Amino acid sequence: MKAKLAILVKAALFIFCLALIIIGQKTVGKLELGLMLIGLAGLLGLLYDYNRKYA
Image 1 (cartoon, rainbow, N blue to C red):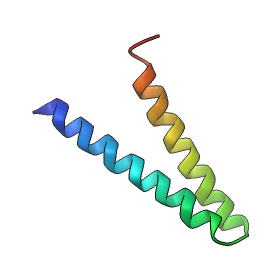
Image 2 (tube, rainbow, N blue to C red; image 1 turned 135 degrees about the horizontal axis):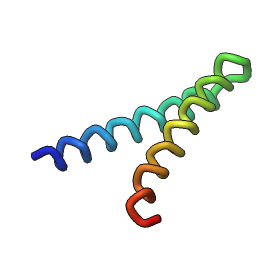
Image 3 (cartoon, rainbow, N blue to C red; image 1 turned 180 degrees about the vertical axis):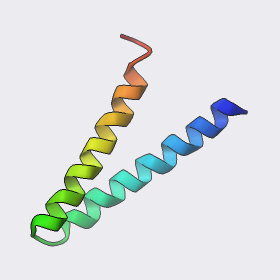
Image 4 (tube, rainbow, N blue to C red; image 1 turned 120 degrees about the vertical axis):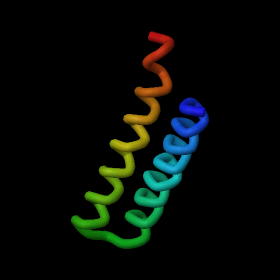
């Protein structure tokens, strides 16, 4: 049960970070750049978490 909850949380976080990147690309400005960087950091964090068990 705990593993399924972790997968759901990671999937929701992935969608949220992807949405931040897409929303940030629509216009130009410092706020939008910040949104894209936060989204990118979230995706990199998820990738790190996935690859941690293989390294």
